[in-house]
Image (cartoon, rainbow, N blue to C red; front, side, top):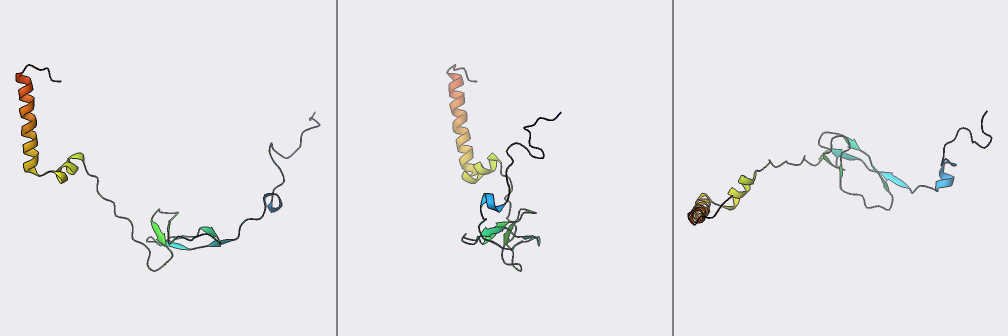
Length: 118
């Protein structure tokens, strides 16, 4: 036997749907953006919104512009640099040798004094 207070065909929290309940949506415009791979993306913007010059392509992730014939180029990825590469940018080989010899002298002096070094 089915309970007499159940509402058939609905779920908890369900209510009347449609524009009348939610209100009218804001007027929109669609703008076409084109990426270097030839994809077209058409996001919708409110009529009073500032429309950006570039947008990210939803298919490949490249930057896209409104100009179909002249899309922006793909971004250049810089190669990964190691810590040593960054150090070599800041120091010359001569400076590195001087710093190393100074550190070794300090280490040898501490060992000669009997200091325990870990």
